[in-house]
Amino acid sequence: MQAYHVADSSGLIKLDAMENPYTFPAVLKEQWLAELKQLELNRYPNPQAAELKKIFQQAFSLSPKLELMFGNGSDELIQLLVMAIAKPNASILTVTPSFSMYKLIAEYVGVNVVEVPLQQDCFALQMDMLEKEIHEHQPAVIFLACPNNPTGTLWSHDQVEEIIKQATGLVVIDEAYSPFAAYSMMSLVERYPHALMMRTVSKMGLAGLRLGWMLGDGQWMDELNKIRLPYNINALTQASATIALQNITVFDQQAKQICQQREVLSNALHAIDNIKVFPSEANFILFKVLSGTADSVYQNLLDNKIIIKNVSNNDLLENCLRVTVGTEEENQAFIRALSSAFS
Ligand SMILES: Cc1ncc(COP(=O)(O)O)c(C=O)c1O
Image 1: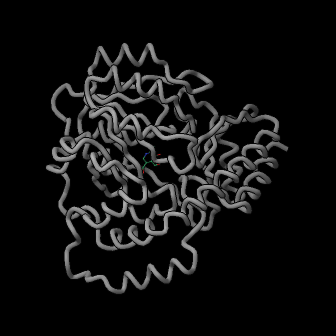
Image 2 (image 1 turned 180 degrees about the vertical axis):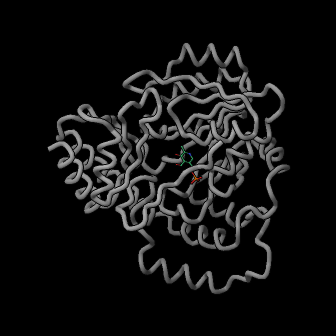
């Protein structure tokens, strides 16, 4: 195995990790610091993050029938889910290309991974193949990122519902990019007890807090709680997320701004010859280099002090790069450097 590699981005315009480019407004920062001052760091944090759960239920109008659980980023929730089902011959199913953590965690926990390729060039779900693989392998968990990373695709409600109906185990709908997507699959989680919703505060503007959340039937949450470490959400994160969620409109507004910038960035990319741009429902855009290679374009951008993500190591993503939507100035700098790479 190799450790998960995070590229060094010091001194660079950072458009590689789907972070929100905006920080807390000054007023909110004052409120936040005042709250942090009162924390007693000599004490362990609340083991269930009980107050934070209430704030989440209000901020996202969550169904009172469903239970919440937090993780140190959704990465930890994925790890908990995979550890919970790990036994000889157990498998998870995911599509490819998709978020790499599903596969990585399953591999290091020793769980089989069934990967169903997306359709070439449009990244649609191959429903027949999915149904066949579900019946053959009976995966204990199916992970579906909606919208998908790194393609930006948002599958239809009907297709996701069909997968839930076919599933013989859990279906985890990972809505990490929900702040930027046209619709959510939340109603499916309310209707099907074996469907769980996973989200994170990372993409909405709080990546540094490391806080993911999962929502689903209480019986599943009780089981997962048995293997969750008791104080997995630290006191600083609990207090900071409370302040942030009490001011959720600030983050909704930032998400709107990012969606507007996504449109501007996508139009600018379309105007450049030699690349193919894919539609996105997330805060990033996938594009394919049609003349030259993704490696050389990536390096060219790095030479211009801009870092994006080279995702061309997947068969279906040959010569593809993924750029995160940044501020207007960052996006313009990126477009200038990209255009010059082709001139
Ligand atoms: C689809 C998807 N799910 C989950 C995550 C991880 O989020 P977190 O920062 O909460 O661990 C990512 C991060 O890029 C992602 O793309």
